[in-house]
Length: 189
Ligand code: 5GP
Image (cartoon, rainbow, N blue to C red):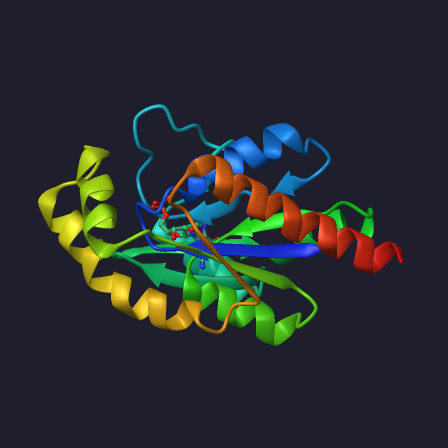
């Protein structure tokens, strides 16, 4: 039986990275797709672990070769999910999570309507801005760019199958677990 494909998106700084990390620790059978990106690695990020860090030229040629299931420009950089990786993983019966932004999520849903989409909401916009600044990983200009995207992202989030508010991490984690269990039971039943 094929694995389930989950799309997880949410605004920058909403804490989806932490949420997914904890979720995967509790669910080691589920895989997280590693995307290709043209942005530079942040401190501590490793090629082939967090992302495949590629040049703009490499990315462009992979787009031309139709290697991506979806790709998008976000905050001045390109990000994309490899089609072959997704197909192979699902064919092995492994459940896969794509942690991608909303334009990419839309492309995947169009191509694979059976994919399950989950949008992570911030408790409030003020909280989101504080979290984004608290990371100290980006310049003010980069933060401003990300904040500009927020309302567009929340609007796009309305079309997702599920929404989780990441207020308390524990509760958000429980809600995520519920969605996955529900889907697993659906498939098996
Ligand atoms: P960051 O630069 O913070 O790692 O990621 C910026 C945004 O790009 C996040 O919303 C992240 O989910 C999204 N992203 C990461 N990989 C992909 C991808 O392969 N495709 C798309 N469309 N978005 C991605």
